[in-house]
Image (cartoon, rainbow over all chains, first blue to last red; front, side):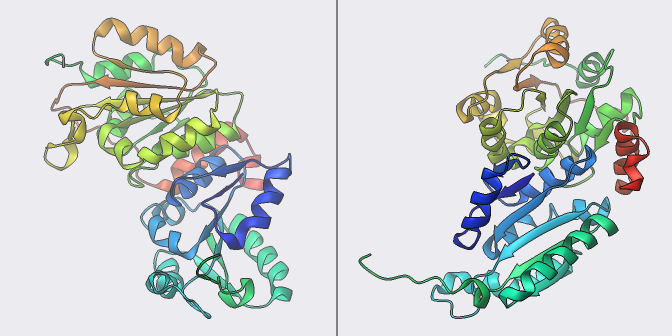
Length: 154
Length: 198
């Protein structure tokens, strides 16, 4: 199961998940739903991943209590906003707080800045989450995915 | 609106869980978790002690993972209102083995009986229908409970039921608090040795 609140940085991954008949892609109304979904999936013997933008991390904080309290695996891929070259000031507070907040609620946080690091980081995150029963967030930095551009009149 | 007296929650939950077979149960935090624990401490129950607003989504994950089993989420009106968006998420997926029962006492009983919006007309069954649930209803009477129990086991479709229950001073019957234990116990009961060797 792969659940998501969409972000431009996850567009291709969401398409791949939706096209893969071995996967079930679930669109969420808020990111914390994906934490609870992953918990239920694991209770029933399946694995889940959660895709979100950094602005969604704050929506999940209390629900992430489930992960540490129950020693549940959680793999979340977070596309970053509010950092490298950000144009939208409203993204800055949550983007800047994201790594500290995820660490504070008990997740292990990996950060990826270059394309050649992505595969290694994800393989390590999967092993860690499902092998050691813990929550792991992989932050895909804004430098990696590219800063979003807003151009008036387009 | 039909006036009180509403149904007795302990009697309702005891009746709903009679002859439960291999039913999987997720209980929302607070009174509904105590209700479920008052019936018995069952390995196929996952009572939440936190994660408010998440009960229905835990149920969705479990329903996807165990398509051959029926999954019953029992939660309160306050807990369900906090996760109201999940009703839209769940309806869009329409898992045929998931059922959501909301024990609606129109207040946050655990924290001092402050009124919830259902005391002022918020209608969770109507919200579920508007989100796209194929079936949803509100039960007020004792004789509606046995047909609901039968539907939990036999209806091959997603549904939600709200049950209007009275405010009562029930003895607190607490389920185990250790989340890792509750998780491992359910997985072992469902998956056997695979639960710990994968």
